Amino acid sequence: SPSILAYARDHGIAIFEINTPNSKSFQEELKRLQPDVIINQSQSIIKKQLLEIPTIGVINRHNALLPLNRGRLTPFWVLYRGESETGVSIHFVEEGIDSGDIIVQKRIPVSKRETFRSLVKKNYRIAPVAMLEALDRLEKGENDYIENPDELATYNTTPTLREAWRYRMNFLKKLIK
Image (cartoon, rainbow, N blue to C red; front, side, top):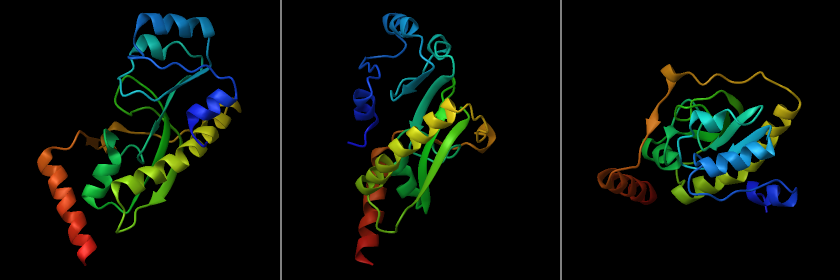
């Protein structure tokens, strides 16, 4: 399996499935482990107490070419706006939303007939490759990160029913053409 979870299991890396990464009990467990890096895949905003535990940092996979498309449901918004390219960014987690320096970015084209599902699959196919590359760079001490400036950032939220409907109608129109 190309998943990060499978990789961690195969290599004896500790995995925690929790309700919130900001719980005191989880943070105490992490402190005992003394990790260099924590890979975050939660939807929670990570608080400072957790960010300070690893010696190198907390990193995250985000399905976008940051600083664009920070926030939620990026594949939906990429398709909704008709963007021709997207990708995966592996970045450091800060107290902001998807705002830390970028360690690795992988770009992928978005075809005219792309669906939400096919785009998510493309993202998930390259995410493990990007994560392993990021971990390798961190292990080697490489620190020529890509800036992720707030002034260039765009933000996504959960789509409204109207936006979801408009997306569906536009997709159907493309299929008919």
